[in-house]
Image (cartoon, rainbow, N blue to C red):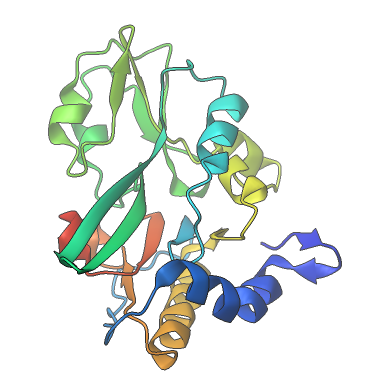
Length: 233
């Protein structure tokens, strides 16, 4: 899906503005890596997060919290940051850390009250009312994403209520640098691969994560350092 802003589509902006913004935010990278796609689902939607464009303004987190009426202490979208290298050659990198909407989602299988299920676009959604806050999902989540707050579990639900109306998740619509995209899983995988190629052609290190983990994810990450640096496997 694409929105228009000042007569220019999100995708066009990403392509045209990539060089300038990426140079500013990504620093100088080294040789990148491509990952093969084996688990794409024609019926699944996916969010694509481009960390080479992200400025960590937190707009996505606030939009998610507001759109879904989550408690003020709930952080359904977080950012995990690391430093690599050694002084004086140290690089700072970060990545979005939220529900990855796994195809193979242990949280759904472990919930004793069936408070987790796949809904529109095969996004993994929490039924807050049904949740008893037992923490089984947190124990089984390979990414330690769920938060238990006041006896309930909160996480990114993909804004399925907006998807059902043909709209983008709140994080996508609010990002000022167009670092977040949304669409069919296959389309987002292709867009992510194209973006990695662009960054590599510009001499920067880039990786696309999410095609193979947990039998395919509903959140793809374009990273500026190896996934293993974030303990992503």
